[in-house]
Each structure stands twice: as structure tokens, then as C-alpha cells.
Length: 296
Image (cartoon, rainbow, N blue to C red; front, side):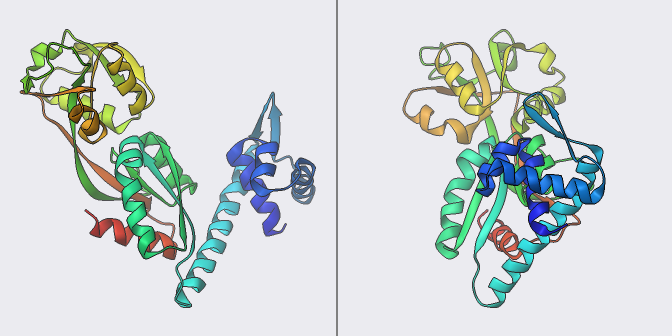
């Protein structure tokens, strides 16, 4: 087997598609299929099964993928180390982030980082906190910034910066203009929350449990998969929500949403930088990590 075949294997598994892998690698689909066929012939077993429109790895495919990913990452690390030795920091760094840091915190920081290292490209993947932590552990991204600390011994976490969640209400709501409401005021209101796995959702549930209420004591009417969707639903008058203050500062300043504090419920958390505890960091990843530490 050669490294090109392993690269094809990794892309097919990660995209779950021969055609998408071919597009990413700028190859024809028949060439991708031939690479996989040769690998299967050499190993003596199937690496993928086609289930409808989806391509699913076999157990052998999953096993080989783990080694392929490590080999490909090591190749990238070697290239970056040589670039750094020659006085150049260049290449692509795959970063993951949950919604709030990915949409509101990291973009300006990436801009500042690239002023210092203009030859580096940051490929940013956004998902929920749980999914990004899993992507770090699987080697799909090298560094993640999430809103909930992952509970996994292979995850190395660094506390990054604080975040506060606030109640947001639509324009015209009776609470617009008020500075505070109570938890009892909040309970009968139709509440829109993020999906399970979101750091915002976890922070809200933790805060409610600490005051003896719990999310079950709230009138939850919808669970949405992104902060943007939550904001749009609140603006449309579907209900109210409790989300990151960072995500609604602009809307609250311009009267598109109302922001209110809950007197007897303080929802705070930290963002966390996540890397793999065992896998060595590439030189680019280390420069970005060092930059984030000084940017707090």
C-alpha cells in the first residue's frame, strides 16, 4: 500500500462517499474506486460496503483508517516541521469549534493570527461541543474550541475565556426594557433551547439543576440545532431563549432583540481549547495554541 491509497481511503471514510472523495482529491471517481480496489486486493478483504447512497466502512476499513490517519498526520507534521526549521510557518491547520466560539470568538482571532503567519490557512469546522471534541479525538481536526469540557481521558483541555448566557426576548415582549426577571417569571414562558450536545444547553441545564429546578421545570417548546436558528425563532415571536451574550450583543444594541438577566439564575461557563492528549501537535497547531493562550 502507498500513501496515496491511504489518503483516498481516509477521504472516502470521512465523506462517506466515493464521489465526494474524488471531488476533494481532484480525481475521477473511477480512479478513487481503483485505489480502494487495489488496497482491498492487497489486504484480502473488503474495506467498504455500499448501503443505498451511503458508503460505510467495514471493521477492517475502520481499523486501517486509524493507521492511515496517523500516517497522514505524521506526513503533515514532517512538512510543517521542515518549514519551521527553514524559518517559514505555512500550511493548513484544521480547527473545530462549537457554535459560539466558531461564529463569534474565533473569526477575529484567526484574522489576527494570520497577520503574524500569513502563509497559514485555517480550515474551520463548526458543530456542537460534543461533535467537535469527538472530531479532535478522531484526528479529523487538530484543535477544537468548545463550550463544554469534554469528559474523556484522551482530551487535553485548557480553560480559554468566560461566557455568560442571558435571556433573549422578541421585540415588543413585556420584558423589553427590564433589567432583570426572576426564575418564577421565566418558568411559564415558552422556551427555545439548543439541542443535546450543545455547550450552551449543558451550561443551562447545570445552572437550573443547581437551583433545584432543572430543564423539566421549564416550558420547553423547541430544541434547535444552531444559535442562528434560535435567534431567528425568537425574533419571529415563537418563544424566548437563554443563549450566549456574545451571540446577541449586536441585536440587543439595535433593538432587534431584548436581553434580560435572571435575578436568581446565573448561567456562566468557560470555553475550552481541546487537543489530543497523546497525539503530538504539529508546529502550526502549536503556534496557534500559543497565540490563543496570549489572546485571552
